[in-house]
Image 1 (cartoon, helix red, strand yellow):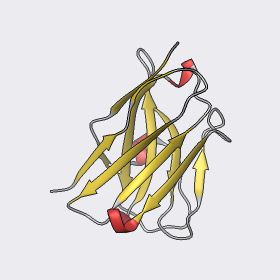
Image 2 (image 1 turned 180 degrees about the vertical axis):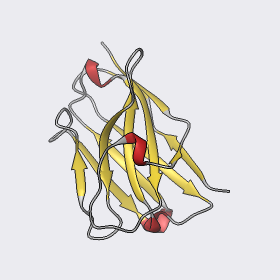
Image 3 (image 1 turned 180 degrees about the horizontal axis):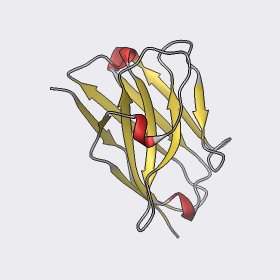
Length: 126
């Protein structure tokens, strides 16, 4: 059974850092494009970052460029999102999504992803 499980969320002060994890089971991440998305209360789900499964190409939303970094550890079948210089506007539930394609590029359009985790809450507040 294909499953994605996010972890690593929590409460952090502005300027702080968190590392989110997305652990996959039932399938091999190397055959999927993986993306991170977030949804704040009253807002639509938006793309944050993605990582292709050939060539390691990444893509980031303008709002997180220079602050967030996506990476993959194939040995652990896990994708990470390192978040630094966090701002209150980063507060949201963060989800990872998986797209069953082999490609050298990726896009952070939520409607393209087939599989989703349950999400992890990130709250940035003093």
